[in-house]
Image (cartoon, rainbow, N blue to C red; front, side, top):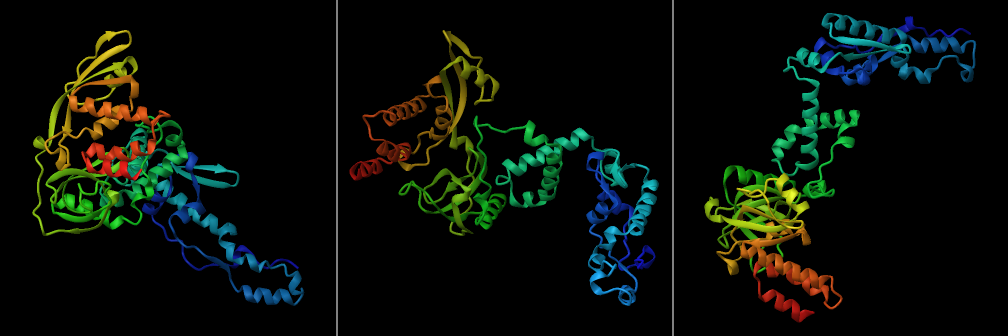
Length: 419
């Protein structure tokens, strides 16, 4: 029996409505990303269903001559007739071709029996969309910039800005993934090895993250719980006037005036909990000219470290390295060091952050001045020697270290007694 289902029996359920503007948005730039008519329609989220007219009657007619098991009618496939209908595809293709001819800027290429469509250039597409004409290089540069923000700076920028960039970051990720550019050509390892923010650090802390940026933007005091190991120096419940957001060692830190202890300290945003506005204090603006002071920096370094400091911006007024002897060089600069947050070291500089940075150079550097920084580097070197010596127990050295840095003389005594 001849199959009675033909294209003549097809009727439309939903008319495929789309405009020239829809087409502009749906068709990609570049032959490598070209899409066929069905893919474009799918991109436009337009539902187009087609079915056979009077199909039930056709089934009954067929049953008069054939048993159900031998029916030539493939009823199970009728739900996909839109995809298989030659006339449906041709109708869409004709409509697209009409629009494409009116634009004159879209190419059509035949692959096998199917036509694929793509914009000749991103500039033409942007012009059709009424956008600024952007070169391919500039489009790539924007994609790289958005991807960089997505990977490394998502926690650093205000959440409202990140939310507004989500679409741009998704498009950048897709564009770079197709070109395999970001994954193969660019690596960002400022620490010398791969370290990046943990994207899960914000999860469960979204509201507090928002409140930090809101308080920073609107200059009001917040009260928050803080998980601190410097108990007795910094209270666990703090009232803060937020001054600056800082990105340090791949962590988002907030520099704040602490009202309870009348000092300035950095806090990890991810460790601030249960944030709420506080009316107990007035907002305090920090004068950074009094909080940070300039100190002359001088160090003896080997030739490799000398070359490194010539290639980066370190402090202010960096001097040309002076040759000393063999592979030894003297470098000089002016550095800014904040005041220590601990009352026991009130009025003294806090070398913690810069000592952390300089410690990475190990035995390739000797700090000569300032004296307080040299003493801190010497303290660390002495303790490192104990850590890697078989004569000393490492546990007390590691346990006491943070308290020595904050000037908490009582805590090391407690640790010594407990060990």
